[in-house]
Length: 119
Image 1 (spheres, rainbow, N blue to C red):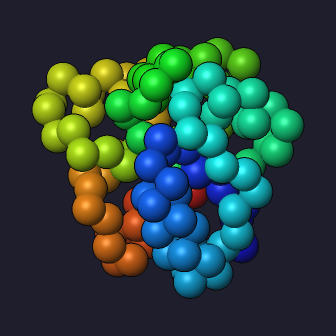
Image 2: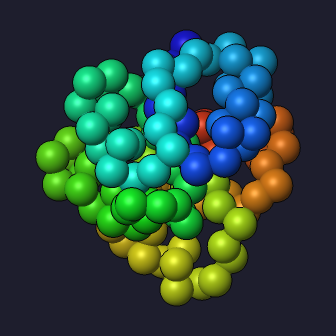
């Protein structure tokens, strides 16, 4: 059972992801509505994994990934985003994300993403 930090500016999306994560037998150690808050909460909660959106206020997901990985090299970050542009996917993965899912996510797709995260 892993503990996740969920990062998305949509309260509804955070709630949906939390329900799926808990249904899969994991738990949520924290939530953040922007990339800067995600970085701060990562240091406080030391999650096993992060579910990260890309487009958010204050700091986007790419910059948040860079900041988290710079200080926590072993961070396991799974991007879940509506953006399916190849350049964003490549940039997220190049900067430390382990996997990239396109919204809307299903229980099966999130399960697969989590399995890849911990390989």
